[in-house]
Image: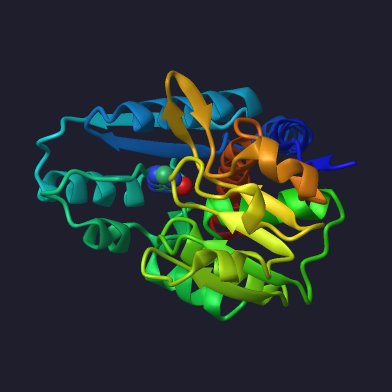
Length: 288
Ligand code: GUN
């Protein structure tokens, strides 16, 4: 029987624990944790993601502060907002939803965020701490969510051949570093990779993060592999992943569904990173 990696159920459990922690701080008289969510423009997928994140915050007692800027916002305006948020003591985490409009340099924006508030883990300091395998940094939310999901089901990645399809800055790249941290043997495939199937067939753990619906077919997957689908695409009004689930699931030892797999775990990881930032900020401001 194939094990279904149920990100919704695992998230529910983890979020209940986050809520308990938050409420115990509040009962002791501390302020609530705060997350600033910045959206530039009206990309429909981004609007959905941002709303999900804000709803999730509310449910666990994290305050969210929403900044919705127009599509034609100049880079300088966004940078000055980040400067304000860096100084704002109610704000523990700053999330600038990606992608950004083309007039704005993504790296400049990420570098402007105070690394202690960079709950997305995209700042070069946090990326460096991921390479250094230091708990001091923030791990990007989707890789962290996948790590938590696999751990929850007792899936040990140490020693596995882990093939990551997609080398993007949000998922593929940081995930390959996290897998290396966890002592797997990662291979990263991307659009220029020759003969993708040759690589995927060797995977004990196969993660696809491309956004290409139906990319991973049954004949590309090894019998008994663990398959994690990060893709979220809308096809004919339906949300689908990168993996052809009906072909791949019978061969897999374990697989994530789409929706209800990695998606909720990404949001849960964001809540955890925000709580971590909050606890750090409290302990750096309270003098014994
Ligand atoms: N766009 C897609 N995924 C993410 C994410 O994890 N964080 C941010 N900031 N933007 C995204």
